[in-house]
Amino acid sequence: MAEIIDGKAEAQRVKDETAVAVEKFRADFGVAPGLATVLVGDDAASATYVRNKRRSCAKVGIESLHHELPASTGQGEIMRLVRELNSRSDAHGILVQLPLPDSIDSREVLNAISPDKDVDGLHPVNQGRLLAGEDGMRPCTPLGVMRLLERCGVELKGARAVVVGRSLLVGKPVAMMLLEQHATVTLCHSRTRDLADEIGRADVLVAAVGIPEFVKGEWVRPGSTVIDVGINRLDSGKLVGDVAFAEASERAAFITPVPGGVGPMTVAMLLANTLTAARRQESNAGGGGR
Ligand code: GUN
Image 1: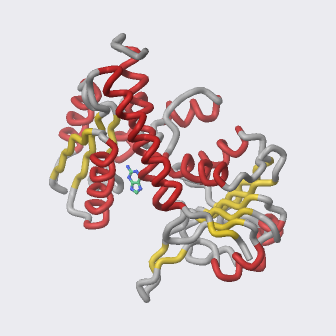
Image 2 (image 1 turned 120 degrees about the vertical axis):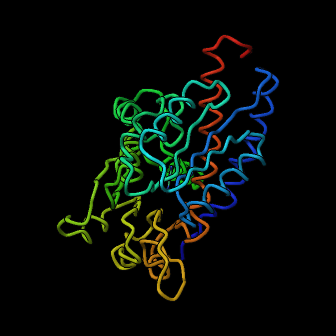
């Protein structure tokens, strides 16, 4: 029977560490780290996510500068706001909540965010830095996945890691981060042939396809570590991951639950990223930093 990886507890540890580091940052630089949040339109789920992010910021001492715009807002106005936030020294991080309304070119908006303030790690410059192994802002959910793997003490060097899902937000970056830790990485997706065989060889499995219980328990390699990034709501209202949890936990050594696994880590890593961005900007501005 697998050991359940407690993402809630680990997220709290990250938040506690961040709160301590924020206090030191304030003492060093005389300002608070600041995260600008931009919410466009009236998507209820997005509003809830942004509210949670702002509440979490407040708890660790990060200021949030919130901007809420109606769904009818034009591309030009959003671009102007992003440029204004780029130039404001109190906005160390900028988070534009996705999805944006259909009328908006999201890529153009995300690409306009200064890479140094891109706490979501979605700007092509940051994706390129990840590929090149350079310091940059890394996306929050993959960072959370890596932190959970570190917490359960799994040896990544030389391990076979299989990632299912090739999204920009999770699959591709997490594959690069696993490679950076010297795992042998196979990046699978919906068109992969013999997926069960690929998964059967995985010492570490990261599932991020967004299909409820897509990975069957019998595919999971006995003794492996399973990280389930999926959060899918069934018609019954129940939340399930991308992995059939009950059967998979009979075989895996470690497994994340849904909810309470990777989910809580994303906001925690956003806070950590905001502090990282703030430290880099204030150090470059020449103030404090001892
Ligand atoms: N919408 C759903 N997930 C995310 C995320 O990680 N970042 C942003 N900006 N929007 C999202």
